Length: 133
Image 1 (tube, rainbow, N blue to C red):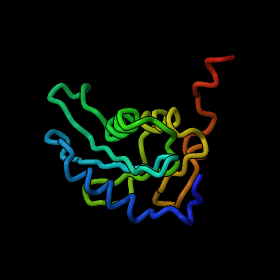
Image 2: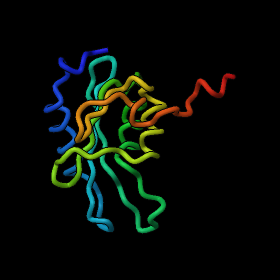
Image 3: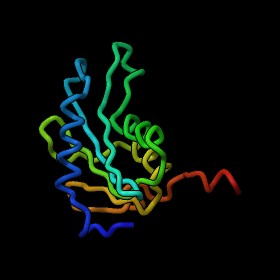
């Protein structure tokens, strides 16, 4: 895994802001963009897509993991999320669980408090390893 010092967090935020610019958020007015580094060096992104039936909206993280799988799979190693102003945003609990599935406890998240492993943002997470016990 790439060390946090070698990761270009600014580049990840640029990609996330670009994704955010394509978000479809006519109901909440709250566009979100995300970007992540994959263990093979790819950078992937996603944006939120709302729906008139509110519960059917897709979060940016859903788009990101869909792109991950659609472009060859792999593991997420570094992740950032931005709001409509391009400021760093922390993913909600549901999205942290989604990220855990594809990045695991060591995936690094950029937060307003600095870079933290997902294990600190989602302690004692439930994951695929629990289903094999």
